[in-house]
Length: 438
Ligand code: SAJ
Image (tube, rainbow, N blue to C red; front, side, top):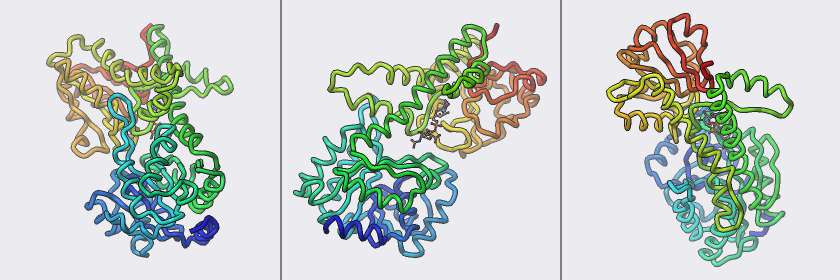
């Protein structure tokens, strides 16, 4: 199939699409292109996930507005179907790859799922088809891993026997469909012509800019935008530690700093969790591991942010002394407010530290089954409560009831969520992260 024929199919939405990996990125992507009129085949290894999707159900956890209805509609219309069988991709004109790309404990990316998907795809990939990696990858992966593997396995050259590109996803749990529709995308192709062809496809589904470039740029942009956020959060956290030491209030400092143009200081907090921010800085830093580039800021920011649960632990120790035999209530286990997503949760890190110190830990989280009990009953006989996640529900906590339930009327606020005056009126001592005692 030549470039013009492919572009025509994309333009008229008669191109057959394949999506490999039907997780929290691939499934909304598949459903969105099906909604736009494309015929989409989704591939996943998990048969249970395939069965749910083909029954019009969403296997994605948590609240994802509009997703299950969309899946049901496009499955009913026959525009989306899921299977474990790669043979279903033999007619695909475009294949999007959305498999997991985790980093290991040494912060090195692991590409087993990506390599396996590419190998299986190579066995059926149609001549002239377009392959787009959407997963977040370390800069250099397209050139050093994806292209060579596809060329070897297909016996064809990228840009000739098939077209190849990288178009990083920008999803966020809780807003999967919204982000896919409303956030700009960057299409990095093996050539300008391929990048433009990719952009033609994404412009059917994306209401924002779709820019074209090369794939190294696309890989760097995605990892750099999340590294930027991690560094910004680390700065806010370091200022919080300084304010505590100097007896100042970082939340007041932050408001005044933001009055200076271009000083959009982010929020200090009890830690940085999730699937993107803790991982992507390491992908960016690892990309130059073999080069003579001194990487200092990125690891330092990671160390500050991943050290915040230990800082909260010290705030607790500062109030209770030896934690052996004490009981601590953690409020919030999800990494993000008003979400049930616990990936890389700072609360899990704090729980480990407390357990290691011999304390008993009780966890409350309104979004997580098993943790969503009566928070006041859970506070009973606890020596302290610690707010780790800024769930909106905690804004309405009855602080007088908390004071009554707790053995010691003390609460650590790791997210500046609670009202200091209301707390003191209720007889509750509030230890606020980033606020030093004069
Ligand atoms: N956090 C802070 N201080 C802040 C902001 C966040 O401590 O000022 C913490 C949060 O509590 C959380 C973690 O950092 O534990 C991550 O929060 P996040 O708001 O960055 O949410 P994520 O992890 O879902 O980030 C995603 C990213 N999007 C993509 O990778 C496509 C990020 O680039 C977006 O900025 C973010 O969503 C968003 O706000 O949309």
